[in-house]
Image (cartoon, rainbow, N blue to C red):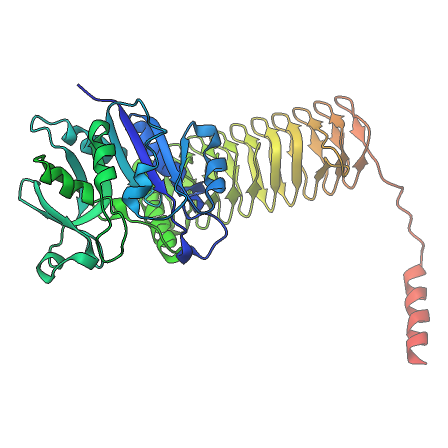
Length: 449
């Protein structure tokens, strides 16, 4: 039988090594705050209650999680991790089940690992505490876990308080800890601060549980999964690892990445089969790419939907609300925002298409812009199926071009064009014979004086 699961996420630290006005746990990985990565993983593990413990700059965290249903608890004084976890007691009042304490700066904690930790606490040997350990390449100043081969913990000790023999142990404490709530609050309230730092340490709940005659156990995971982020350098390293894994997954799922290391995905990018992605492509949040699409080099795509067999770039920018239909084309130095291109529509060169609807097989000439903003409001441009917009045209919205209509090059369109019509909006061409020759002669004479 699975007990209900609650999580207590510790995010009260000041994060001074980030040297940032933004709270540490809100720095993004793949375009999403690291805290929200963690919350999503915990949700998928079955957490029904989630409490984030905040302190310095906690208002930022409170705003960031407002739409998630996460509860907030405050640690007004920074007295250590056990003290921080205890601040969630009121928020979880009446909850009976398993509580997992973890850290907001470890965004890669996996759903399966959380589930394994909770399951270990419910095993037939009924341990009182389950701890997540790891064996890093460099154990540095991590707290150590002294355990038997079967994972039974004999002692846990912070590095500052460890003996030379204990520091030689390579099994380290990630800080992720599972305890039943019927035990957790009593243990946390019993933790003292007689240690080198004078803090109330979360790992001391293990020592206390063992002293009561309970059993404490450790399960292990990889170092990368529990990597804490405390600096910009560590943030970049975790981002790099996340991106490498996502690129590998995209290729395993049937996409071609010509130069994988130069492609950057967002946390929610969806890529179909037989998609070709050229070098130096950046995906922001909210992008889906259907089967068979091609993304050429140096394109930046965010909040866009790219249809089957569509083609983007090179040097294209798709902004939120861009929707490309089947086999449509957005070419070099084209920007599309909040606009839909129908099947087979083309915007090949040097154009801006914003707040627009472009019909199937319409062709937008080079240098065309939809003038969608008057300084106060946005307006829509509609271009019908099979319409042709000549180069260097400005379509001043709100305006509509009917199916099959042609807008001559260089036009400034301010009125609707009916289907099948030609719109020619430019002054007649006038040539004054000999004028340029005479002008140059006059100007040279002035210069020679």
